[in-house]
Length: 103
Image (cartoon, rainbow, N blue to C red; front, side, top):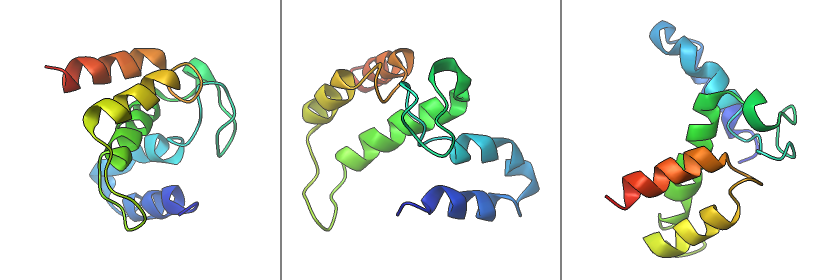
């Protein structure tokens, strides 16, 4: 699981028209506070596409059934994401998620 960004990058490297998204995949595990991986980028130093993917990935993971747990409902997932905005995730991207999900 820890290696999944590298697997994604390696797959995309062979698809020319998707090459622009490689950095977004590579850095989507960075954290807004600088405590993420692979380079510990912080805030606006994290590519914007990576910040979007990080929030979308977290929301999807929380609201999907997993082999080890049932899916959370939308409100539970949003509460966790909102609580961690400014720590794990870009607050502006979190606000955009709320707008999209609550339409």
